[in-house]
Length: 155
Length: 104
Image (cartoon, rainbow over all chains, first blue to last red; front, side):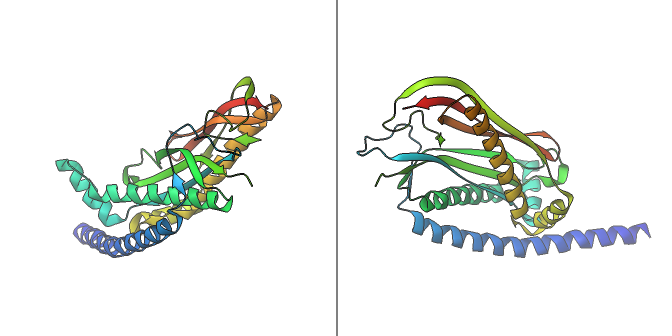
């Protein structure tokens, strides 16, 4: 009986791995496509990490803008990452997770700035936090916040 | 109220510094959203429920900071920063802080 139960658990893990692999790679591909498309559209709204504005006449209006996203990896990638944690080295699957999250957060911030009629975003900052830290099975869910000052030209 | 992550407001000199203002909120996650999150942990992708939850929490922290600034008589908050920390498993604190000033 116990052996049978263990067998089912094993099958469930295999099923989740396969499900995670397919849905996760489809989701990632779709997300990257949307990121690249929107980056093309918002590319002329420059984001800068510098603190001082260049002299502008007339003086522009400034306001805070932000964008954030909570994103998770799939079961398969989490499994790969766990294997990686035994041997050490680069965890590629988490690198792409954070890359997607950062770019998405910037895009959302840019979209907000665009709605306000801004031409640039100054002093952009990132804030990254891991959601449900400390829970054993929940590594791989991150929140990324991007915020900065939108510069809205006068007139 | 002007808010900015910069140290100055363009073309408007700072007349008075009123000190630091801050607003924070601690949020716990919701069971219904946790179920969805469990599913997303398998298939991957954005957890929209959490994005919204944290965004609302940040709005609230920000609003509290502005309230404090208003109470001090400021008309701008400069050098605004956000910070997030997880207080305990399943709950996070969201903090917004900045310098309250009076500009011309």
